Length: 460
Ligand SMILES: [Zn+2]
Image 1 (cartoon, rainbow, N blue to C red):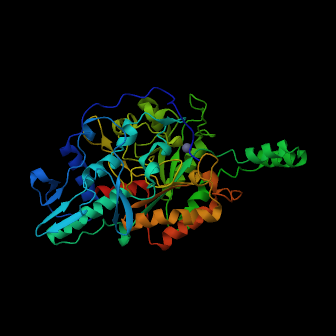
Image 2 (tube, helix red, strand yellow; image 1 turned 90 degrees about the vertical axis):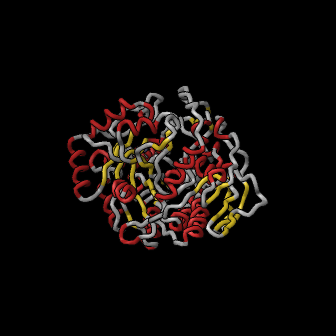
Image 3 (tube, rainbow, N blue to C red; image 1 turned 45 degrees about the vertical axis):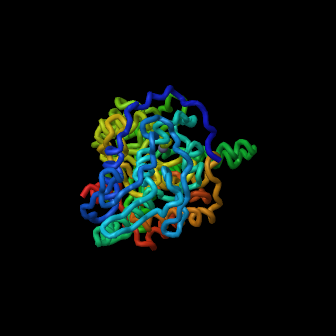
């Protein structure tokens, strides 16, 4: 079940009151359309008044001059064998696509619909946040209309692709990933805990009154390494599939202002040496911004300095993200990429898109500079009292349709598996379930890439 929705922890900053003009929406969407294919020939795409070669029927009316979070209900149309929701579809009886010599008409406003989803309009203008200050899945159009595991914007782009191919007579290919792979996978680990594996079983033994067992466990805890102090084993588990791990390190061990825990470890010289060694073996290190840093640039900068890191990759602890504040802060510090944007409550596509994208800046009406590599699946989402409670054998079958969508559109499958869930004692969302997911990705010929490699591939 999703987390209960409550009032935001702190007052939300006001949203920008700038109307997003049609030209800005069109430019933002077309830029991402061009980024999602290998080469797109020059062809004029726009609304009918400009008489372009590919003409889109305007269906947004005054929606983008207002600040309502939700548009009218979408119209369902079939595309590539799937029922796809089309927002701003003002002519539901007209065919989606009309192909004429040298000209194409798209009768649903896929530019407005793609902009609405890709820009995160709903969460920017909605005031609803959960107890961690996050926009909740339950408040999303993805939950309301049931399409969280469908990358709807990629379907819209496929409609546009068909129109471009018709008008130009050239076939469009999906963008290329290294070694000719059809899609990429980004395997990451948020390092929240290194020393706490012993706590759960010890507490349970004490509660059951099993004092002998309690004594044995305490003795083991005091004399042996903790099962979660396993970064090298995590790297090895990932390397077994020819992949490199990206580790997001949490440099704050004091709890957040609301008592939410941060790291259970400090950055000792010994740990720093181990992290360095992991990097030398090809792993990547990124910053796991602690509670509160998603809205405090000064503290986020301090955490980078603690790690002595350049602002490269970032993911916020608890997937904290305030859409009215965080993107500008990530840009101002100069991070190359972020990989926070998922719904904690459900795997899938928070922005209905399966490729990295440049988040929209509502204040300037253009794109931000950092690349968002959206997160698709987090281990905790799959089995957690607040989220889904899939049985171990249900996990891969549940994820397969989503992974197939990513493969179909040449996207990136971003996986977050915490190091603590490599504990052999975890048989719910543990090392075996991770291995099944990795086998699937490997068998489907993915290119395993780190966040930085994805940035490089994407910016070239
Ligand atoms: Zn975390």
